[in-house]
Amino acid sequence: MIARYPLSLLLCAALTCHALTAAPATPEQIQRFTQSRPELDEITWKDPARGAPVAVRIIQSNNQTVTVEKTLATGLTVRNIPLSDLSGISFKFTPAEASLHRKPKITSIPALRLLWQLRQSTLRLTGSNAGESGLLLAQSLRLGAEDTTLREALKIVAQIRSHETSKPRLERVLAEQLTLEFLLSQKSSNVTESDRLAWEITAGPENPEGMLLATAFLGERHFADLKATEEEHPRWMDDEEIRPLRQRLYQLTLDFFLYPSLFLGTREEEAAHGLKRAADVYRFTGSTELMQATLADLAALYPESPAAQEATAKPAQSESQPPPETPVVTPPTTPPPPPERYNIFDE
Image (cartoon, rainbow, N blue to C red; front, side, top):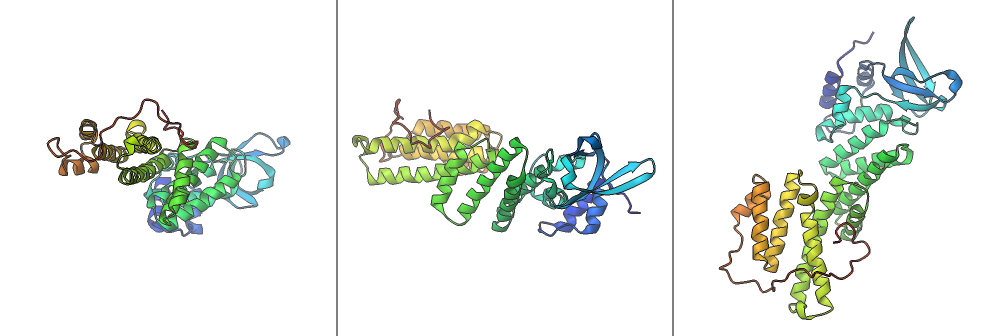
């Protein structure tokens, strides 16, 4: 008889044994883990004549069968049930499992891999929440930001996408896939693809992580274009063709840099960095009052952030210094029509 262990201890053991490797759990680890869980999972028969849904302990699954345990009057019974006999399945998260699924963490990767290994074969069944474990695993792998972990995460979300039955979860999976593809495009220095994917993220469903990455990238790219435009056209204010382009670059750059502080202010590091870069834009354009106001906001809202520390270490250009060559301007009240892909950043 296999000894029963608290789930928290088993998950901790999994973390220790697996570290951050992609090695599958051993049969012994799987057996100890699954036999520690209560009989609160649920299977639903495809044939209604077989009765109501049954509470069981699911201990294993593969492409053909799911193995369950059920305590009957005669004792503990183990059955191998063909997946073709089932119309639905659901894993009841224990408190320890629920804790794992609250937030992606690198330290959760080994335990999430174990859950994913056990449950991924049930994805195509209605009600299966195996995709939740897979999605959290992919998101946790993304935090490692290594090429190998990003590709492993992309493979997982592709598998979930092909079988997921929950529409809300599928939307989150698609958002994660876009985020992963964007990060991989940056790893390969494919600027054109990064630009395309970043704009697609801004136009897609809710995706906070992706938005932080995409707006940071697009902010830097548009700031570089703004500088290049003013350098190439120093008299842009008098040029009816260049002025709208310059103004659009100016507005977009600020919109992207200010997005984290306006919409995701609890993400302190990203929000603070965006405020610092917005102040840099104001400094570049000679908007001293706006620059100082933005730096004051940065110091008040995120005083301990690296961006605030950097701004303090490098004092802003004082008003007594010579004015910049770039004329001070304010955005036009009626900007030219934005390009088609210009979406949530439109006024």
